[in-house]
Amino acid sequence: TYPLNADEQHTHQFPFIKKVYPLLKKGGILSYCNLTSTGVLKNRYDSWEALFNETQVPYLIEAGVPENDIKGIIIFKVSPPTDCLYFQHNTAMIPIVVKE
Image (cartoon, rainbow, N blue to C red):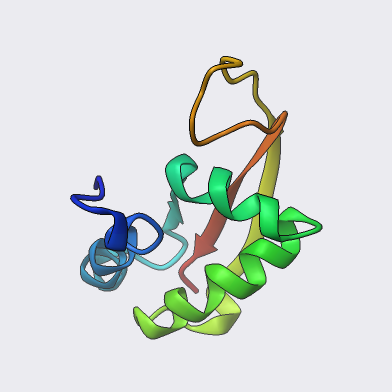
C-alpha cells in the first residue's frame, strides 16, 4: 500500500492488514515496512521498540491481530541517501506478526 495523502502517511497499511490477517494460515508470517512513516516518527522516540509499541501495536490490535501474535520487530542497517526527505537513520525496523 502507499499513502494517498499526509493523513494516511502513518496508518495506510492497517486497513490492508485488517483484510489479509484473517487469510493467514496458522504459522503464517506477516511483516511490513513503512519507511515514509517510521523515518519521520523515529525522531520523536528514543528507540525503535518504543516507536513500535506506541505507534504500531495499538493499530495492529485494532486491525484484529491478537496481541500474542505480535512478536516484535527486527532492526536492520540501512544507508539512505543524504538528501532523503523522510528517512535519515542508519537503522530501520520491520514488525513481525506470526499467526498462532
